Image (cartoon, rainbow, N blue to C red; front, top):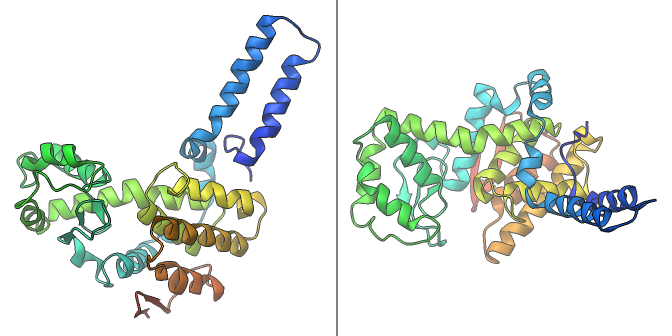
Length: 304
């Protein structure tokens, strides 16, 4: 089902032409020209926010979600998803062991930390600590909030060294901070990705493909943010909700995502796509059924 609120970028020239024709035919004068300019300008601005289009018409969308199977949101499938992501993010299936993980991996995003790779340079770690501090004032990370705000958007450690990493590891031993990490992972990454995949008519594998892309590329609206990647894929192949082939669409999405990874860094390892998600797709495992075997960074992982 193609929802009216989600316009593909390729359709914009047609819309522009329709607006100009409808307003211009049989009319004259500067007021008519001004009206055309204003409406054309509004249509031209439409492509700027892929995320708002993807999240439009929520009431209608909620009916679709309610009718869809649990998919990746089912407890066992969600647990499996965390294991697969952890194999790429932390080289382990024991994703709960990563609550206290923190290091600078040299990607220009400052410290990467926690179960989903929250970063001091990409706003999500700051938001996590702000929300956690609001619920738990006086926690061990709260004194670092001024520094976190200053380094947000950069790779800098200024004001964080030498104590922040120790404070993070100590706080990660507390159930409340672990729950906060879980909640922020779900709010920012898991829930939006699964919801949108269901609206696109994707099964459990497709929902995971969206989730892992959301984690790696971030929930951005730019060309290589998650929402930008999705719209580029929709221009090349229709999603199942638009009458397209699920396997073909996911193949196109993975192709675009892999290219975006290489654009970011030519030497980047893309095995989380090539020998994990692509393998599941080639096997026709659209339901992400176990047992599963995949490779990431040369290591083999198996879930029985």
